Length: 48
Image (cartoon, rainbow, N blue to C red; front, side, top):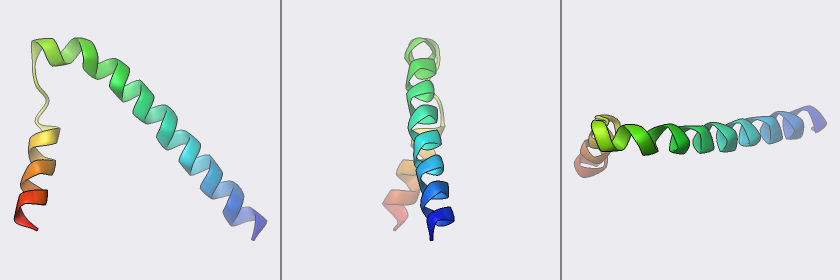
């Protein structure tokens, strides 16, 4: 039980840090070129 809890905490922390890093990286690049990732997500959400 403790192992799963620690793994979940590590995964959650890594996701938070990665999301913060992605936001910092997207701010300067969004002005130059919009990434195609949000378009793919919008297509998946539109199909479902």
